[in-house]
Image 1: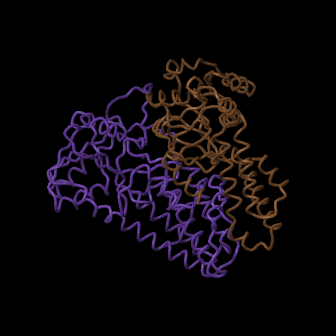
Image 2: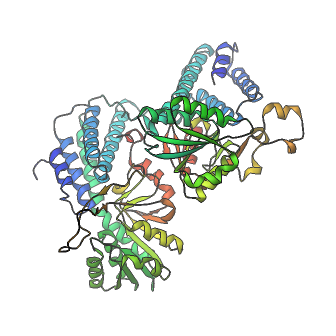
Image 3: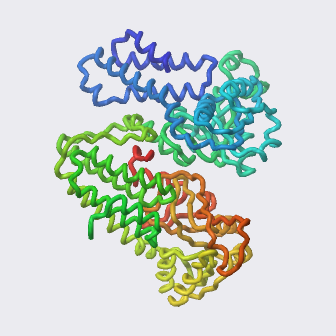
Length: 280
Length: 338
């Protein structure tokens, strides 16, 4: 998002059309980089809509220079909102973690880390199990970060989720994207965790910002687009995709209990309504 | 009626002087009417702060009393809406662009600034409160009127304990349909007994059963209809003790569970801890009980939204997944954090 803002500032185009075309090119360039494609693409789409949807003000602007000012200002507001969204998630999830809870989490999520840090500051005692989350071992990074904050945590094998689930009180996940039906796209392995948790009647809480809401309803895991599943460098390399391991998977909304977002605490059925509000 | 002060209201709530949730809702509306009618406020923001203080003090002392807080938030929405309508008329209509709704921050807890002094605001708000009062009074009849469409002839309906709404629902339907009701007695208050008596008086075939017989009888039941104390924000309900096992039994036998609630019971509260209360009322009088035995009486039970089929409200039936939408219509998004 910050990258988009910078390119906006540096841009020297003289008409609105040219400006929008340039923005689209920048977005495509961003998606060619090895980042979490889902959140970047949804975030940038929302950014574009937000800055160009200031109809009233734009109509009154005399020339392109003032148009550009307006767009820049709105862009800055959007970026600021995005940075504040983590704080808002913290606010809606203050009472989520209670004393004596045993929480299971998957891979490295900054939102989950922030909520747990806040809970420690409020003096709550709880313990955490973190899955290793291969292939990049991001679970170990999460465990290190949690121990630095002072939360007793244990790293478990991805395969040990079924074994550990009976001991756990709740599952907390982050998300890379939230689909229109309330399902989430997250690091590979989240589908396992959520399905097992639902089977054992454990609540699954997802902490996610609202700019990650995407307008897509995947029917199942095989209908996820290739650009989400594999890193951009792998796609560009042209190797046989059947042999590549996917980076993300899709979790059905039935397995999730509640979504804690910067728009408040939402049940999975509320996502579609918020998407409509964000995109119209 | 004399002016009701906030402290008196809270004391009355604490000593449980109110019989039904409807009485609580009506009294809290009356309290807010007094506040709006008084001269302590000049701008919309002052009024909103006064109302918000009432809400926070009730919630701080008695977090399980959700009906008064719901009414406070309803009145806050009324005030904000009336303020916006009046301001819109004075300054030319300014529809907020929908992309601005991204900037309305539901989780921030700050009510919108209403700093203009508008003389008609007081009258308009009082009118709207009076409409709200009328709605509360009519809610029982409106719910009862839906009974005929929900119950068919020769059905077996199960209910638990005493709920005036369910009683009205069933007696109204009994005028046109012939059906059988099974009432669970609902210990330790045993208010299934007066419920069964009332149903008999209305000419309905009634059977009274123990709470432990709910599961075996459930296979012969067509519908379960209960009342509730609160509907929580994810679509579940917080209600009398025994409802969770009743709902689980209904789910097991795939029997639909209907909950009769008027809109003032819809709360923004999430499903938090159920409060317990220690009491000796479960022990029959006259028995000698050793003081080393701890007795606890749970106040409320939580039924998750998966076990509820539908809510029967003032004007229509709604699904648990729609509760979220209903809440956004009843209350203003910035008052969620009271």
